Length: 148
Image (cartoon, one colour):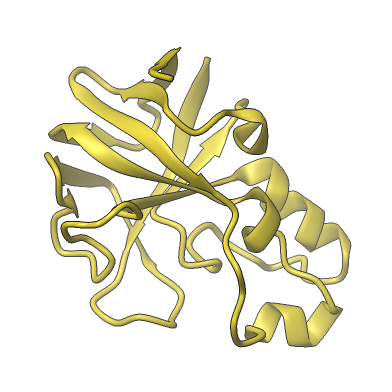
């Protein structure tokens, strides 16, 4: 079982997201107030704190959750090992389904430019909201099942 260590949103694409204490997940849409929300397969993005730690060790000790433009930073989950179709529950009622693992990085971000690597294309995952609900920092994340 994992947990939410940070929730981050932004109004513009291509910038680090701002950390917030809670967020409203909207069914088939994403996080209320986030630029990446909408009717598509990458409504919510996830990155593990363990992945951020890898980049800190490569010479960026001050990286914070949200710096990779991820919405939800997790701890104690091996995100890249989850399969597409896996469902997870966050907090009391929100449910999401993993739709993509990793993504192509078209333009090298500031993080890649500084250290020659970025974990988001390999270790970030994306999901769509199956059931909405309010989520909070420290909420538990339970892996429910794969729907394949």
